[in-house]
Image (tube, rainbow, N blue to C red; front, side):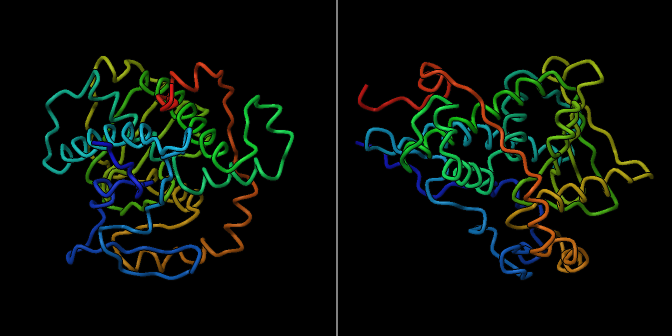
Length: 296
């Protein structure tokens, strides 16, 4: 029996967003395009795109990448459950931690906005096809390249941050936001740091400047201290990186930041967005990212 490819792709998994639901199982969402604050279902249709990670190859949809993300998302949800149940003693290391880091890094680098921006750049600059050495002359070819490029960027970041010191900071007094592109921007990542909210009162901090690496020593858990200046930095990063939506624990939190996410300010931020291309050989494209031609 032929497996039906997954059409509805979550750019941010429900298992992650559920930590921001309110007492009636709803999420408070600021829709950047409409500039409206709304209470929405946990089904989170605002975070879903059709076939986002499922390119068409030789006339067939191939969802190996969506399956790859699903495995990481499942591990990420188990990781989040450790925070929910306050299980701060059982070690997290090895393959479990690798998949968790993949899930965390992926959330920062797999947004619909980022993929659509690369598609727009490929259309706007015909010379990129020759520079990249791949066929991006059709929508189908561009989609395949964009997905493979995204995986290459994520893989490179995951390999790097598997060598980081990883700390979960829990119990913050100040509430934390999240968005369609949660996590640190490229400046922080290039500097060897990455953080991502795990919920309205918890976040993960990855630091390459402090040994030992978590992949061998495990994850540290730390209660939030009295000085929560870092939360302001995290929330400012969320506001700065948001392109489609922001989620908060309450309507009031979104109302308080509305003037920071006007269309005019979003347009200015878009101008400074970096689009990263990774050179891949044909062998790497087929073998490395599992997007194999069904006819081969």
